[in-house]
Image: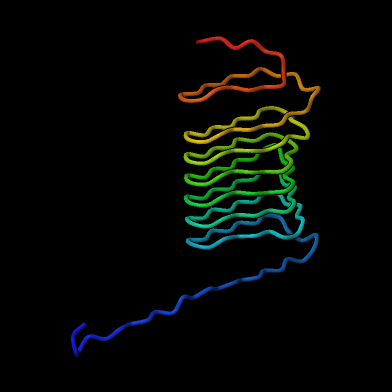
Length: 166
């Protein structure tokens, strides 16, 4: 370094925002962030929940809603219990892991794994991973049609089924 050169130190800023909602008065919850994680630490019953993140993880404790939409460009989506007939969750780069789902789900990740367990399914389950594992646990008494495709990998199942080439 020369005599007139100066070092610059930029501080790292960490911000936390805590939002408290009154019990029983929530209808819709819409959250959009550019950078940062979102955690829903309480149980919620809503009409609609939509969370979009550019970068950051999402953690959900328990939500019951008519419609759910979760999307992140870079980050993981995690939840303990989701109850809805319309769940859409997508991550471009990160995993999608939901402990228990009651209802229907459309889960997608371009680079990351999908892992979930369904307590009940009322219509459809769709899980797509361009690069990563997909692990879905379904109720034992469920009757269903399965359609799957893999470019590089294999299918493993506890269900009796025959696999055929298209």
